[in-house]
Structures are given as structure tokens and as C-alpha cells.
Image 1 (spheres, rainbow, N blue to C red):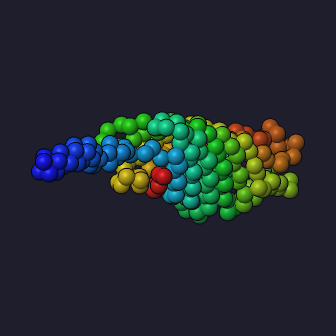
Image 2 (cartoon, rainbow, N blue to C red):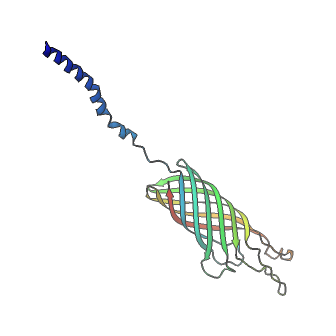
Image 3 (cartoon, rainbow, N blue to C red):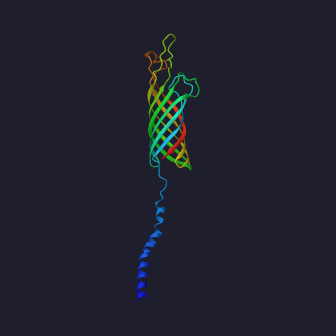
Length: 217
């Protein structure tokens, strides 16, 4: 009788343990399910070298090299908004009049797309301001007339279009190259006698290029 009662107790305990055993066998599968795919970055920071032509400055023969920094806020894979700042102080050679420096502060939307393998492309619209300082250029008035320099610094609204390529070297690190066409109208403080002599206020288009490193997070 005792042996039958002991057998029944063992059978009940075994039945209670079976669900626990099954649960412990299923539990290890949960971490595999919890593994997430790559999280899309929300921010990008670009730091690099840049170059801009100097068509706003009369008699300039070459452009300026400088430093460019850009911060982008991304929403998903394809769309973002950026702020772009550049200071271009170093001429290709010393033949430009004066000692010009170009400052740019630009904002706008950007569209991203995957091209092939580790290569992506992007295009953006640029809106902001451009400033040129250090350009005491004479107006070219007839001999005997006191020369009048451009007012410096000269500030203008700027706008343009551009795009580029980026190459993925690590999950969060990319090499980026971009080219832009930036249009601005630099204001010159000139006498009225110069209005018909090719030195009035004018709009200019400058080509800009940049190469640097992008960190996405």
C-alpha cells in the first residue's frame, strides 16, 4: 500500500515538472528573437577640407581653400535636414587682390539613396548666406579719380544645388565627396559714377567642393 502511495506521489511530482522543463527548453529562443537589425542613424557629422571659386571678387584668378563642417538630422533612410558652415581663407596662390576670406552658412534638405555595395549618393538644396571680407578692390575709375574700395565685409543671401558620393568604411564611418553650385549677390559700396563701368553690384555663381569624413550615430 505504501509503495503504491509513493508511486502516486512521484507520478504527480513528475507531471508538475514537465511544464517547467518544456518552458526552460523554449526560453533560450527569446534572445534570438530579440536581436534587432541595424538601427538607422539619426545624426551625421561631417568634417573636411573645402574649396570655393571666387567669382564675386573682380580680378580674382583662383579660388580659396578652407575647412567645412556639416551637421545633418536624418529621418529614416532617405530624408534629412542639414546645417553647413565653411571658412575659406587660403588661396591657391597669392595673385588674388587683397587678402580675401569667404564664409558660408547654409541650410537645407538632403535626400540619400544607396547606389552599389558600400557606395551611396545624395543631393541637397542650399539656402543661407555668404560673406567675403578682406577685398579692398579699386573700382577702376578713370585716372585722376580717387579709387573706391569695395565695402568689406560684404554679406549676401546665397542659394544653390549640389550632391555627392559617400563610401562606407565602417558601420558608422564614411568618406564623403560633394560638389555644389552656389549663387550669391555680394553688395559693393560704389559711387554712382561707376554704375556704367562694369563695377556695379552683380550676382555670381561659385563652384564649391568638399572632401572629408562622416560619422553617423
